[in-house]
Amino acid sequence: MKAKVVWIPRVFAAFFAVLTALLSAACARDAQKDSSSSIGKSTLNSPQFYALQSSSPAGSLTVHPLGNLILPSGKLEASDPFVGLGDAIAVINVPAGTYPVFVTICEVEPNHFREAYLSVVFSDAKPAGLVLFDENGAIPFSDEAEHLMVFVDAGTVAFADSEAIATAMPDHKDWYAKLFNNGKEDLWFSLMDSPKHLIKGSANIVMPNATQGENVVMTHSGWGDGAYSIVGTVDAAGKLLAVHIDLGVAYGEEADEDN
Image 1 (cartoon, rainbow, N blue to C red):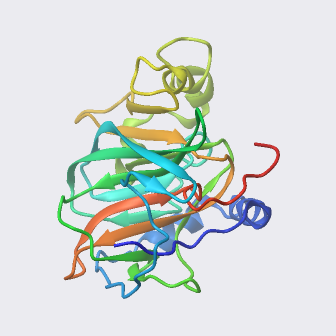
Image 2 (image 1 turned 135 degrees about the vertical axis):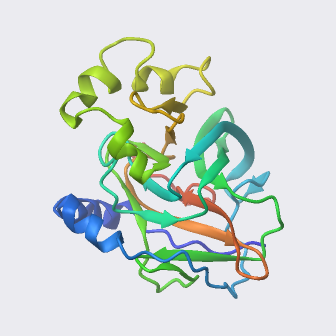
């Protein structure tokens, strides 16, 4: 099953990222409160989806496990963790549980690697279609569909349990100096840059006040900042099998010259 994934060029993505930054977190939470977990079917059958696969038009792909994501509430939040963690702008209702997370990396040129997808997998069943997500749940995949996206301003995407962030993270004002970056090896920036933690460019980090191992699983966002689609794979009955952040790398598009 392969399908064309919605992707917004970075020249437009910058505009949408700024626009989204102007929205208050309270409004974002209100927009997500009534999200449904109903799953729609996709009828698409095109070649533009390569998460968890071995090849793509842009280059060969390798899939790397990043450990498990713990979702006590089943409210899966996708975000740039260094900018929007806990803002609940993109939240999808899934079954509560513990699930494996993977990053699919593309070799776009010899020895030049970029992250193409971040995926959380709920079932090993064979995918039969794709869905997008809006504030009411999953919707049939369509190039014209308005859907949830991840807005990236710090070159990183992540999955976490939305409700767990509120209880397992300390006061927001302390995040940068005490958690993200002060030169210590166990802080988030350092762990992402360490090939000894998982693989360089990715991290799986337990939140400081976690009581059940609630964590954030993150990776660099391919070519960098922008707006990236959240895509679901479903089985023939429409059951959600996995959620993917599509970083727009696997299609052979030329990267922005700044990258």
